[in-house]
Image (cartoon, rainbow, N blue to C red; front, side, top):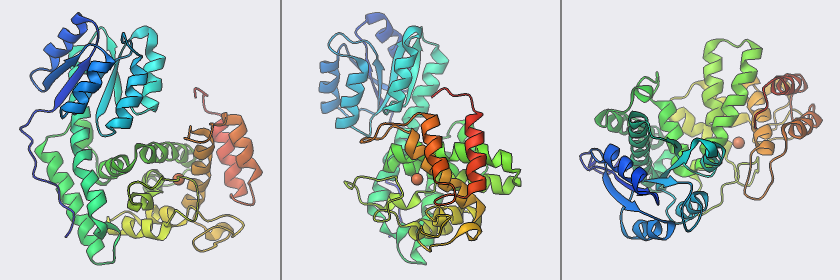
Length: 362
Ligand SMILES: [Fe+2]
C-alpha cells in the first residue's frame, strides 16, 4: 500500500497548554489564543506534567521562570516524555539568550513579553500546523517501506506522498511563506527529516547553509546552486529508513549509511540529477578510500565534494549527545589537515577561507 495520511480532522481546534505562574500573562495568552485553540493552563511544572500526561496537547507555551523548576528543565522533561508535543518558550527581553538555548534543545520558538498579539497568534498557529504535518508523516515513515523499497512501487509511493502532502497543505491553507515555495519538495523534505529526528533536519539545514556560502564563491549557475542547497539539506536522506529505536548516527559511518538507497529515494521523488549525486557520493573521499564506489579526486562530482567538507565541519562544530562541539578555528584546522586525503585540497582551502571570513557568533 502506498503511504496515505489518516483522515484529516481539520475543523478540530488544536489544544494549547499555557504554563505560567503569573495570572496576567496567563489571561493575556488565553485571550489571544482562545478563538483558535482549546486552552488548558498550569501554574507550575508539576501541574503542567500532570496535564500533559492526561490530555492530548499539541502545543505548550512555557514561561522560562516557574516557581518549582526552570522552564528549560521542564522543556527537557516534556521532550523526553512527549517528544511530539511542540513547545514555545515565553520570556522577558533580559533572558533572550536562555530562550535561544531552549530552541537548540527542541523548543519550536520563543515569545517575548510583553506580547505582541498578532505575532503570538501567528507563531502559535504555524507551530500547531507544523505539529499536524509531522503527526501525519510519522506513521508514514514507520509504516510505508515502499518509500525505500524496489521500483516501481518506490516511485509510486513518493508520488502519492507528495500529492497527499500538497493536498493537506492546501486544505489547511498554509501560511504564504510555505505556499510560495516554488517546489513542494523542499517543505516535504524538511518535514520528513524533522518527523524522523529533528537533529537530522538541523544538521541538513546547517550543511546546506555552509555549502551555499561556498557555492557563492564558486560562481555556480543558479540551477546548480539550487541543487546544492537542496542536496545538502537532504544528503542523509537514507537515514529516514532506519527503524525507530535505532540511534541515528549522522557521521560517515559505513555501517549505518546506505547512500545508494538515499539516492534511489531522491530519484523516485524527482530530485535533480545533481542533488541525487550529492546524496549518493558525499561519503566518497579524495584519496579513493571512501564509499560506496571508492571514486577518486575529480571523478567525485564538485557538489558532492563540497557537501563532504560542509558536513564534516558540521559534525565537528555542532553539539552532539556524546561529543563536545569544537570551536570553529579548531574545527577548520582539523578539516585542513584532511585536505588531499578526505577532501579536495583546493575546495578545502576555499571552504576554510569562506568560514574564516564569516562573522563568528556561535
Ligand atoms: Fe551528514
